[in-house]
Image (cartoon, rainbow, N blue to C red):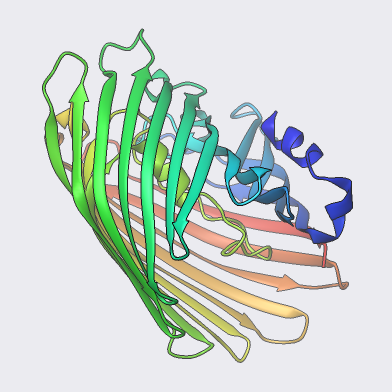
Length: 429
């Protein structure tokens, strides 16, 4: 597997540049409606050994970042078969010619729904994988100007949903010009040739062309970026379809405790891009808490036009951490209007260090999703509280309870689920 192969590539002399943090745990969880059913409620006790980690390696020949979590769920009352759930991301750049030629390797492993319109019960999840690799050639004709040529091969695979499976070839030409130490202009021309699983009649092979410009400016307390261009798509046997590409992003850090990020976009996207965008990263991975589940709406290779708005705010200070997220998303599929949907929602997560070894936390999440073709509306709510006591420097005991609910105007889609969890955690510090 690529994960093990890349770690073996680390040159022996660069071991001091590696950093590893990890968490091991075992949890016992009780659910009063494990099947997330409106009428046939089944209680279940789940044994969950788990591991989570972040790893970085920086050196002359290899830059590597990896983060993720893996757990095995055993259903002790035998209502479902045992399963693995994972969310892993690995990015590596291997220098072939320093400052001129590198080889990129990326791998993303995720647990996604089989049918996104059904709840994420144990028999409605699957393992998916996205692998990407290829060379990047860099030319510097002037001190502040860089020309970048890229070639990539990518493969997407889903354990159950064949509509997600594809082979992708892409080429890109990018130019970067730094007008000042704080500002950069760039232009991008990208070419994609995507071949989907030939046995699936509802998913088409397609060609894609993206041309857009980007401006970035970063100051000590704020930053912004803007993109504008055109995406052209041609499904096999059809004509070209043209869509705008617009992205505006901003960040604000007025002090060392508070940070806000906002983004607006309209562009062509797909589930593979969602996996990369939502993958765990070293920068935002908190080893004291599990990684949030990926919100991928439909595991398919089909393209959609996405209108999206995001706002995220985080405040840290005096032992407290407060994170607020809000979003709006609309998806218009280019080939299958049956999948068209829109959603909006918000979440709040609060953690407090009440004593040197004791922390408490709470979270709420609400989301409303609408499936346009069938006029279906789902309203989801989830909330919970947790308590953690660091019994020893590296060992903690935690306990928590949560409530999850769905209200739908579609018959038989409502459910509630209450859970209680106790965990023993070992963290490398």
